[in-house]
Structures are given as structure tokens and as C-alpha cells.
Image 1 (spheres, rainbow, N blue to C red):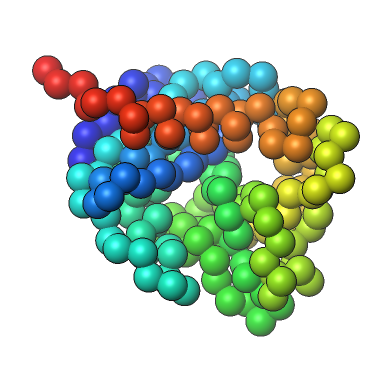
Image 2 (image 1 turned 90 degrees about the vertical axis):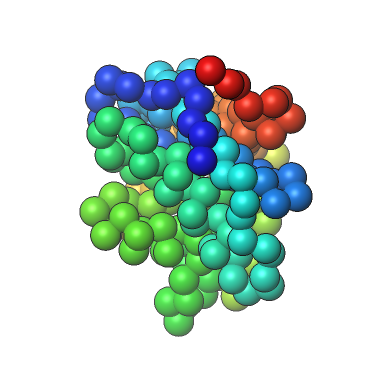
Length: 186
């Protein structure tokens, strides 16, 4: 694994993470910010994972979770909250999504907020729809370690006039760009 643009000395921050893949390679990106309404990140972190688990239907977390842990591990301080692209819970029966597996991997010490762009039907009873900007299509928020309604209010407050908050779009672009760029050497 290779890390770039290290986030050192940033203090306690909220972390938004995303992962992208090309073949067997994975790239995880993290943007750190001090408050939910921040307009720009205080720091960025990239982790390259040369060989990721293959995609397996129903076990997405096995591919994504190691990448997220790889980008969070080098941080000087644990974030106050981690935001993932996806669900924490996949339904009323407590079926875990990526965010729940991350919450467990972080030993239930760091709240995890899941922000999904599409409704997963079994999760409709636990996901809170958040409409932002003029979009008619909501985001779907689930959470562990923090009240889901509080998490949804925080996502609604995030900067940006569009459906996708500015910093969630930022981490997505950072991840995709890092995947296109060759790794830095030396």
C-alpha cells in the first residue's frame, strides 16, 4: 500500500472516504474537515492498494473495507466521524452494510454515517431521505454510533448548492483522479 498527501497534524476532524478500482488495484481517498459546514478540506489522504479482493455479490464490504482502513490508518488522530459512500444498515432487521462493518472494525469508537445516492429497497425503512438544493432525488442517510436523524441533519447542512455536498463530491473526484494518475515514487 502506498499513501500520498499525508494528513499530519490536522487535529480532530470529520473524514469522508471513497474507493475506486481499476482491475485489481484499489485507491481510497479521504478528505478531512473540521465541521459539517466546511467548504474545503483541511487535508487529503490517498492510499493505493495494489491488489484488492474481487467483487462478490452481497459481500461488497470485503472489497471496500480494507481500502477504507488503509486510508484511515496513517492519520495522526482518529476522526470524530467517518462518512462512507453507501449504507450503514441495509434494513430493519439490522443487516449490516459497509458502514456497519467499518463501525465494527473501528471498535465502535467512531461514528459512521452512510450517504447513499440510490435507494436500496430493503433499507427504505431505516434510511432517512435528505433533499438538498433543488434536486428532487434525495440522498439516503443511515448511521451507527450517532443518531440517524442527527446524521441526516448534518448531511443536509453540508456545503454546496447541489444534491451531492461539496466535500463528498471532492472526495469522489480525488479518488477517481488518483486512480488515473501514476503513483508518486521517491
